[in-house]
Image (cartoon, rainbow, N blue to C red):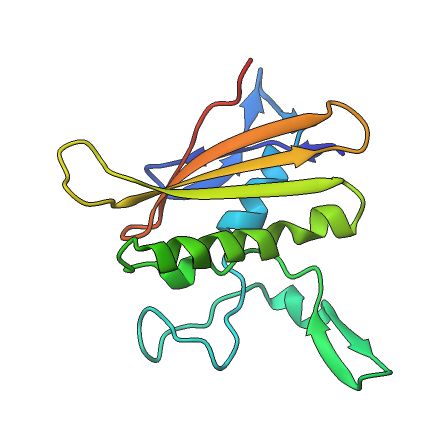
Length: 175
């Protein structure tokens, strides 16, 4: 799977296309797909509590067309929704409950990799981190490990996410 490569710009708090020698770079790994899956804002359901009451439920407009209707159950569910619900945790204190919610949001956002056969397994570990000079955890470390059906067999991608500012640091991939 080849994507246009994205690089995270911490100052702008956004991803941008990566240029290499004046041309758009490509990503044959999974880093770009993971960045989009985890750090794009999925639309919050009507019954979910927003970080700011009455705020925007966010999401990508194209997700309105990513619903699957199950005729046997007569219900619709979101499939191939872009992004994650990590943004709902902004302004949250990092507690064991919030870490569990973050891992669940990551698992849901990355489930498409297995469903579409791109990965045979995806494992997410979310841990609290204490910023130097602080007493309590104020960062989440997110590690994503992907087993690919066809080589390279395993890839690991590491990120830190500051829930209070939504700042993401994508740690460099090993050479």
